[in-house]
Amino acid sequence: MKISEEKKALLATILCLIFMVIGFILEKSGTIFYPISFIVAIIFGGFKQTKAGLLETVENKRLNVDLLMALAAIGACIIGNWFEGAMLTFIFCLSGALEEYTTNKSKKEISSLMNLQPEMALLLNELGKTTETPVKQLKIGDLLLVPKGARIPIDGILTRGCSTIDEAAVTGESIPTEKSINDPLFGGTINLGEAITMTVNTTSENTLFSKIIRLVDEAQNTPSQIASFIEKLENTYVKIVLIAIPMMILIPYLFLDWSWNESFYRGMVLLVVASPCALVASATPATLAAISNGARNGVLFKGGIYLENLASLKAIAFDKTGTLTRGIPVVTDSVFLKNKQEGLNVLLAMERQSTHPLAQAIITRFDNETTTLYDQIEVKNITGFGMETTIDSTTWRVGKNTFNTQIGEKKELENEVARLQNAGKTVVYLFQEQEIVAYFGLLDIPKPEAYKVIAYFKRSGIHTTMITGDHEKTALAVASQLEIDEVHADCLPQDKTTIIKHQKETYGVNGMIGDGINDAPALANAAIGVAMGEGTDIAMDVADIILIQNDLEKLQMSHLLSKKLKRIVTQNILFSSSVILFLILSNFFQIINLPLGVIGHEGSTILVILNGLRMLKTIPLEKTTMSESKYSSQTADFVQ
Image (cartoon, rainbow, N blue to C red; front, side, top):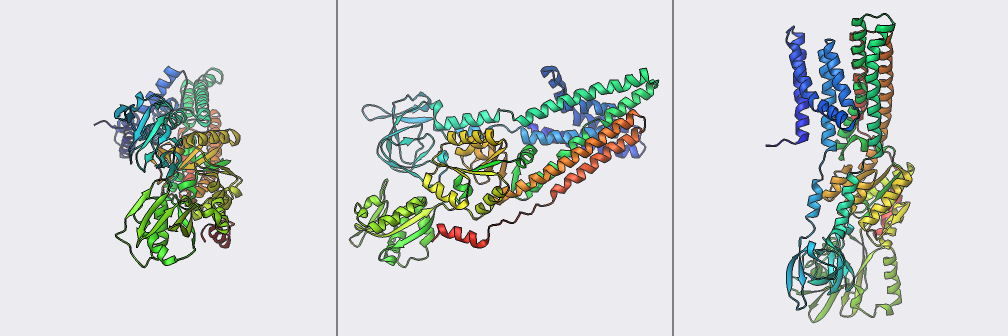
């Protein structure tokens, strides 16, 4: 059975620790063969890093900390400090194992995303017969038949028929879209209505889904500025240390009348005290503690760099549906003009035979208010409009206002409906014959915590944006209640990506929060991508942070956690750098010997680790300035 790289790294770390502990016990018990155990520990823990360091040096002509740590461990062993060498190796091996786990994730979810794209299509010929044809062989202008319940195989235009299309995979919107002649269709979306005919208007490699895959792939292969800076710093640091060691040995020996043994001894001490163990410990334990803290509170960070960058956040963009809002519509307004109880009984009987999200919302709202059950009625679906049934010779209809062409004659009713529509709400009508007996406003309303989180970021001076594939009126209605700074509506995945790239150029460190396939390119291109835990696999795969419980307040906690981490890491770096500089100078002036150097080096490491462990303490959320009465009034604006 093949072992993954992550498991190999973890196994090497565990074995290094085990043999290091065994060596320590043997040394304390006086066994003369204890160095063998330390050597085995160093081999297990340092083999991969040393190999990587040598390959990097030979192939890319650049030095790295992997090589320096190997030399530091060897230097410690040469001067007889076996435990120090093993400890240095173990700490660095542990860091490498964690880095392997967090950064070497393959793009396995890309293949699962591609599975949503149908491989075959039903090609229509001139005689109206269908032929199963590979999607890759389709040409612009081909006619295709899309059966009920099938995925649309490729981007195109609706040519014949009308239907309801589930476009959640592309737009992220939970409410299916009504499509009629000449409306655009997107590959990978689902035809919920009757069979339709479409005309292909693009090639398979240029479909919307293909663009999503390419955008994610490009973003994952583009190194960040921070990663490039770390590589340059690492190369410079190693060069300075490697130049300093022979100078430390030769200059005192040649010009200061030091003996060879003393010069070599001081060189080896320098190699130990100048090793970046304390510097690594300045960030790694604190970051791991913060990541553990986040996981305990429902937040998954895929790497410490994303947690650290969150403290520098300057702009944050939110998807609407499922992120700021519940993701399902609710009935916010209900007006019965006559026959309320009878209308409710018929309405619920009809809606129970539909799986449409609007129908489910109405059922949820009125399910406990019916008094008469109509179990045996026959409901007819009228594609693009709604449903109708006949009870006791009376025809009832529920759906769009196109059922009643006389609605415009009732000016007061028309004005009220216009008010609901201008507020971004979907209006559903109940008709008895040709007369409207009730109408309902439905909207995907904001989550309660959305108000608090947006208010927090605004107080923190962070620019807030909503980017959604939903219609402008609906987007503006939600954004105005949440007091979001900037709104972009009717956005396709490439539009979201363009906006995020622009914000990244404008603000530097920006964030994107979403939950759908359509959000994946934007999540990948943002400096920090945040996915909702109940979202799609691809969104969670490309994101840097995952809110496991779909709780937006955890994003606020994460930002506070990041700011605390930044303070602690800064303290640790300044302290550990000062200690290393002090030890180097003390070694040059022959003030310290190897034991004191080890105590100073390891002591500083332990102190910064202990300081970093303060990140395990749960971060309490800041209280918002929005009063309960204000929140209640904002909610009441939606639900009446």
